[in-house]
Image 1 (cartoon, helix red, strand yellow):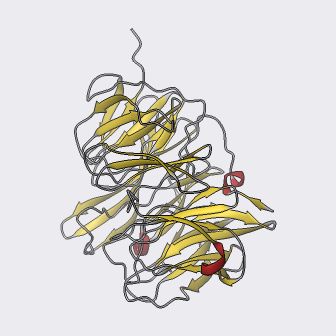
Image 2 (cartoon, helix red, strand yellow; image 1 turned 90 degrees about the vertical axis):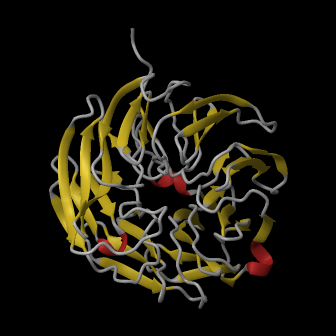
Length: 405
């Protein structure tokens, strides 16, 4: 029997505790945010965030947590911040690591792209090879700092960690010797490290894993170079794989019934739906459908009921049947996209890279119901809590909430 990963942390209403929300499904539950906003309209507050980071904000107990990388000459100060959700006041600003010389990254990336996780009074932050840390949420005190993830990144880091059963799971697909690993959340020590089993000419990727319970045991689902692999959460042993050429994988896998749906290549993106489970190479037996048209290279698809909504990096939005891949519609939104779509207000919200948001009806016919725009670059997926949206740009963090007279 297969149980999907949303069971692993139900959280509470008013929390958005990790990348794409408490359940990694980008559903803002019991939240009603304004349908219209601008740089000033329905903006409760707007604050400047020092440095640059494309990590999404997370919100727990009326506190927002973000990471950022602040330039310091040729070096960097890698930082985590806590902000009061009601006032926008900075509660603490903690340096995690100082880097003497900033490594090179892709022009679309930042040195603080992985999204934090908040759990049980702690904040987990990840900066790729530049360090992973656990902080006390109320004070910012560093509880541990892990510098064991030593690999040569290509274009920087991007995938966010995922926490399950005391293990922080991270993909480390660098330019050579790619691997998947888990850090013990209590100690900060590496619990297991599993090299990728498939040699690839180009071996880097930036994926955030998902986790499914298959036959009562949690499996880590991690697309990577030229293959997709599932690993035992406790041991790190590879359980099964699907072969598909590709590299630089970014979107988080999406779970639907007994399927995992994922993209396997950045340059020639193609969504694949694969039946969960099995042993060894299940390419011939478990692939259910494939679709190249409009597939995303960066934004993670959004599942609502039995329909899958997604947007390509160049702004073509689609809706397909999650079980069969049959297309309901495909329409151009305009602009380029990195942020993942979100289900909020009973609608689908797409945010492009230049601050333009498009609301559409979650139906099998295409219908736009609104557009909004703010200034700045918007690569980070927004967060939602207590009838507010927290939107990060390249310079600012905005709280969008219905203004009271």
